[in-house]
Image (cartoon, rainbow, N blue to C red; front, top):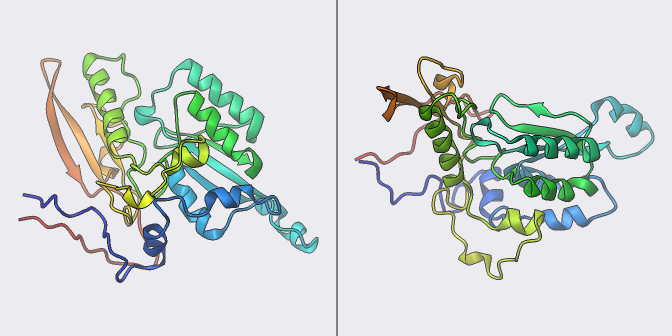
Length: 275
């Protein structure tokens, strides 16, 4: 049986590489993101905060077409931010879609990308609009936490829960898995939603991930035969529904299909105590 006393990721700073050390000492993904957002001198945030921002579902980017011209003018790059919205199972209501469209038109570049993991993605959001965009996503009863970063990403399945009772159950499972594997830190609510700050974050715990979270992204998908619409063998964990007489009775499980990698490390060794 698997030894569940071990965290998925190492709790100690000993022998951690640069990224793992940053996560372990980030105050559970807070870093100095709030201070970076409040800095009016630059349209960017610090490089360390940019790495932590991924766990909140956002990447810092810049306009490559303007780099040379801005460099000649001794200006910083034209920074903006991408937000990826977590949509378990790809299921969203018409009202949520309209809210996303409004965010795109008001704060982003008037486009919405539908990702290969069934998420929504905005580009071109300026730093001064990043927090309000996150708030508006939350008002639509969606969020971006764990849409990026070294955690479980958006959990996939057939997006039509009305196709059958089994498909509805599968969609519910996708939501439950996604929510269960969210980081437990209060950082997201503190930074983006003006949530009550934890006075002593040293008492916070990440019971699943530990304070270094995962070494890389992790992906889970659920397929309902005969369709393989979510490409189940490309998932780190693939769940293949076992259906008998229109009733879901369990899952066949595939593992190891994820294609995430750490550049420069050609060999990975599994560290799982199975006894």
